[in-house]
Amino acid sequence: AVQSFGNNYLLPVDASLTDAADLSLVAVPAQAVLRQMFSAKNKTNIVILDACRNNPFEAIPDLNDNGLAEMKSPTGTFLAYSTSPGAVALDGLDGNSPFTKALAREIPAAGVPIEQVFKNVRVKVIEETQGQQTPWDTSSLTDDFYFVAQEEKTKEEIAELQLWESVRFSTDPVPVVLFMRGYPDSEYIPEARTLLEKIINSELDEGTETADAQAQQEAPPLEIAAAEPEPAPAPAPVDTTQKQERLIGIAQSTGTASDFQAYLDAFPEGIYAEFAAFELKVLADKAERAAAAAQAPTQQQEIVVAAAPSRAAPAPMGTELTWTMPFTSGVDGLIGKSIEELVTLSPLFPPIEGLPEELWKEQSCSNCHQWTKEALCTQGQTYVNAGNNDAISKQHPYGGGFKMNVRSWAEGGCK
Image (tube, rainbow, N blue to C red; front, side, top):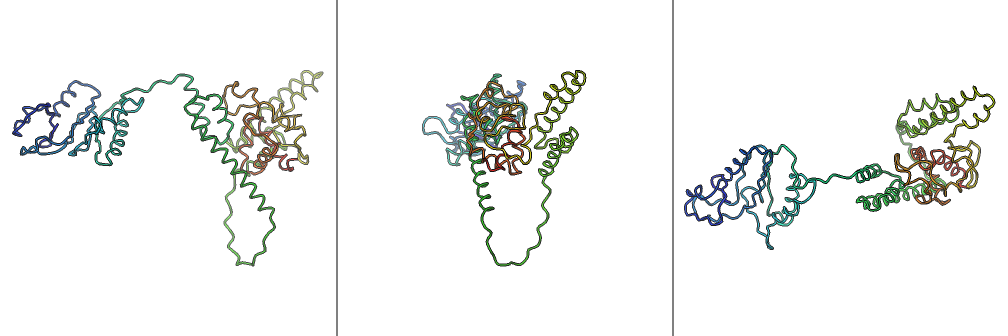
């Protein structure tokens, strides 16, 4: 192909020219090809011109332009050139040109739109030719076009993807471990391993910072020379976490539905919202059972005992919880059991809402958690810090009551 006076012409391989005036007699105007394609009323037309070579007729006056000119194309056309307008494309050293090799690699990619295919080709060619050749394209397409359509996912693949999307931004290692266990051959396993390593390293760094902070608090104060008084700092903004703790503390101390509802009204998405909603449900169940007890007086004592709410709250104030001491608060599965017993039992709540039971039910918590006495003590110290209260409100594995009891145990020195 050659250009003359801003128009491109497609030449037969055996074309012979001695006069530029004969060009239109032996060659086909490229614009005429586009016109014929448009007249066919196709919604999508694709033209790829990999013919931007040196002009073989440079010696002929008025026919000495290199490369091809940029063309106007009708609506619904994708027009690609192997290099930019007026430039010359390079030949390959091993058969195909850099443009052809890159295009042959990119076209089979499934689910990639044509615009992205040629963008990828452009990047590859620029890299291989060290910037000497830049493929060009223009588009007036009105529909999406794929050389190879994306394969539809099966129900199992969709479920796998949905589960991965629910854990990929998690800061808790347990959901990630369960995903890896449930889908060991998943294409997302490399990302899951990277995420798990990041979470573990973050928790280790957090534990180190906590230990350093405690060491600084225990160190004796240094005597320093008196300095000029500094202006008082501006008051810090009120932390909503403190407000939430006060409201949930009041609700726990009174045990009334109105106080738990007051917390939910103030913080519907708060860190204790799930816990407050659970308490409201327990109180409602208790009220129903009490009403039933009033109709059956002979069974009232038994019903009241059965309706006692399983309060996910820390051990009573003044009680120093130990490693082997049975819990007196929490959901039904916790009361009467010690931390030492619970670390070997199965979780009561799933790590991810909707996760199939076969992936977590009847599984020992020790499979996913490194629950040694020392490790739990470190975890309990993080719960003491107000910044970690959002973790306490999570149900997995034994509800918020377990984590609150662990916090009480840590406050007592992890005895």
